[in-house]
Length: 219
Image (cartoon, rainbow, N blue to C red; front, side, top):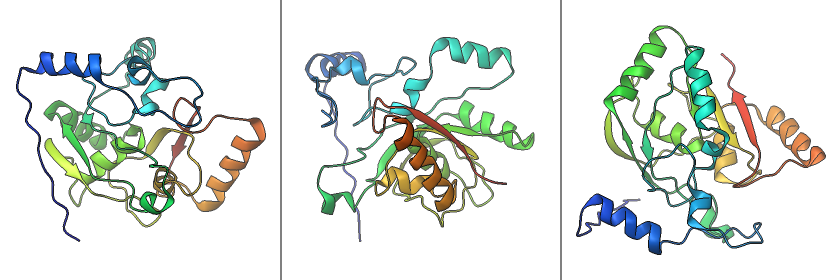
């Protein structure tokens, strides 16, 4: 199947466009959230430009105090830009085509930080499933991440060899969702089944604005 990518060009400078999005944009309204979601509800506290189609909700677990603590402990925090796609359309047939292609931009400083971490055999933690897709799509056969812009159509699942990311901080996803399928690259079905049973037993919140899990794939 051939996928066509089209670009939109806006008239005006970047600040004007972002200001217009903030003034007129409306975020995705989730069925499990009873109150109307405002635009600032889906902007993570440490994010920069609002370019995602859906809130990159894994980032809700982080704040500036956490990043400062990491810095004190020698943990390097690097950023990339990614347009997080939707996790569900509400249509079961259409959801089978998820995840859709997602644009990303990896700065040279981030690619260098990853390479340095790899040389030290340090753990690379992705904050969110979309970051996993971006980094793995930008990696070559030996796991070297290329800086620059790209669009990933990578579908990560149980058979996907992960060349970059060893650990994932993510929201709690339910079986059958495309994001849950990505978790199968990090943990066995038995382990994920135990996790989800624990989620249900203790009433953890799933979906956006929910709780978080940290999953490390076996070496």
